[in-house]
Image (cartoon, rainbow, N blue to C red; front, top):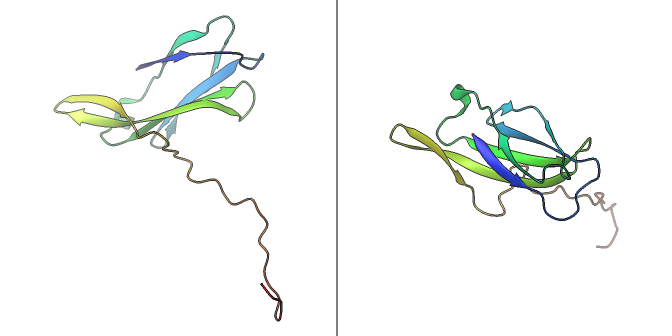
Length: 114
């Protein structure tokens, strides 16, 4: 499966990397030179047994050598008869869940007013 990727604007000088995940399977990180090749077709080699109806497919683009996510998108695998395909998940869907509350917890002591 090929996913077209296009870089706009100024990206990190070191370039980028992308990888995908479907179910419990994660593809390897692949380097992408944003300046030499701003448009590529990311070739995803998904094992056939992982490409099942209703699985979620995620692709993420990172700044090279970091965990900083530059872009991400997700799709749901669908089956129409014998044909498998993908459809985008609703905008704003984040498979990582909500951001954790980073504020430290404060507990009241006995007799302390709110």
